[in-house]
Image 1 (cartoon, rainbow, N blue to C red):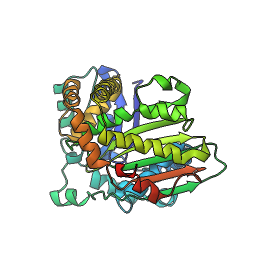
Image 2: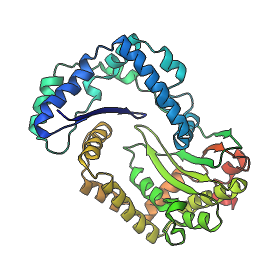
Image 3: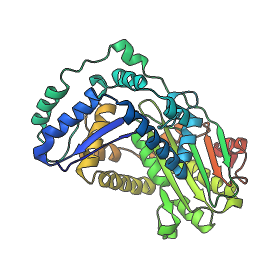
Length: 366
């Protein structure tokens, strides 16, 4: 067929996808159906994949951003399933059995938890017929079993330091509990994230970018880069800032300016900030849908989270509806005097004590 077949896993979703010419769509759906329902999980294949996944885990360890965010989830959602890494510990990879895989698929690959989405040269009615043909015989899990699989995430503000003094850069992550996909505050938090923004020293132009945090960090040579994030899940989320710096001695100042920007969100967000952030946010969301593959993924994710697909025009309207008062309201609700999760990785000796950071979460501190 000359097509493309792949799969990936996130913390809440597993995706199998195929890309092909439009005349091969029936074969693509048939192949995906066969993989999901009829895989035999050959023992030799399982043994080969163990080594592949262990190598993937080793590659993840080399990506410091991945490592920091794994520690962030492990600290923020400790003792819950959301705190676990996607690949899992090495001992699990080495010990998992064929029976474990078969049971997992039987319990989780059920039609009430699945979405078949498509984008590009595809006919919707034709796709529905293919879904009925290839997936129509699947049986939904019982409501009791379906409900029992969900373990609510429980957030805990805490502190994790992984100190390596010989590393060239320090990695710091500050996060508070955010909102779920379906929470009405989700869109205002996205605008708040856009106000803080992101920046990389290699891009330059820091004195002229809209992010005030970028201007401060550049002026005082406090960071190589930073990224504000608003990560959402089915029942919770994380709102935070991830910073990377080779200025190992002034990490307390780096964190100071990051927290001051959070305080500004709570107390002094301007209409100009919100206007600019909404335009930047709408642009970035539209650019993220540049191609049939991200559109297809977006449809599938939205069907799982919202039960429907929000069109770009609907998303534009939801963002445009956010006001300056809304941003300050959610900032006060989610950031002001809230428990913070702090992760420090690398040469983080000068990163201040957790209690100081926690006490600084209240604007009254300044």
